Length: 379
Image (cartoon, rainbow, N blue to C red; front, side, top):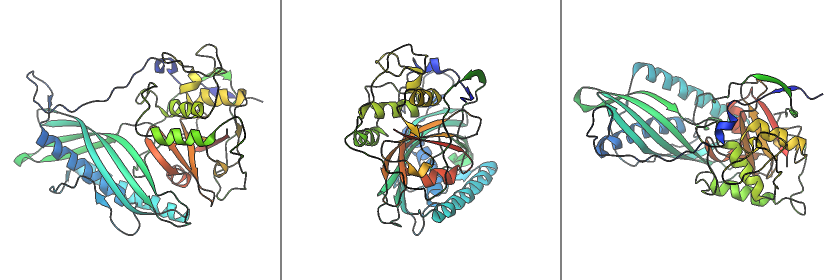
């Protein structure tokens, strides 16, 4: 029986949403209200963010401390009393995650975190700052064939308060990305809150997360699809988005749009028809189907058109296969990602948008979300 499923909210809005990058303006505004920070102040904000985010990253590193990427000396970061308490809890959470990863045979030997200020505005004695963090973690060679690194790009918003003596106190730091947290981020994933529309859709079967999994080898050559091309596309555009496609970051997330691009690069063909019918799948430069950008619609299209089958265990996923996650177990899928590397020991590594991530081990995802529902698709 096909169960009742959920419709993601406001998918239609994604068809026209555009996201543009922001540039930091250092000159002061001539009008009243928020003013852009000058270069020296913006550099101070970058050092503050770098300090906090680097401490989070170092909580995951096994043997030695990695470098703070800014390379600029600075005074000790001042945190509000509440944020100090929150960050202490965050570091404890990340150290516990490191322990769970070690139990799954994963560790990191080094890390490099770098922060760039995208925009900084000051109103009175308050500052609001948008930054982009780029972190590289080096995998320890536990089994011998792990990838060299995993890379993450995350956007944060900081709020700061000016104190006596010209110092700034950090009051909050919040991720602005949807999808799974970065491996060095302790907060919960954002999820779509949706309601059941009463209709029925091809939901698929949740996959086990028990490791290791029973072998289920994939035939990668000689078929209709080029799985290597899918993985190469995803690893080329995981951080620098392909300008040939619109991006939907901040408007429901770009994860499924990115997966659809990768699948098309590997040979998936369009299915024409209306944009709202999940049985259709296409992108034409001006519009796209709901199934191109919506996590739930993509899964419904995939199963109803027999483009993929469900795997029994997430660790069976191989190059070009797709994984999806329902973080809050409400029956609606929240995130899509593609396997772009698989170790000989049977560990898949996923690459995705929202948050932009390169070769994250499935172990680290499950260590962060042990209670989520996972779906694995053999494409």
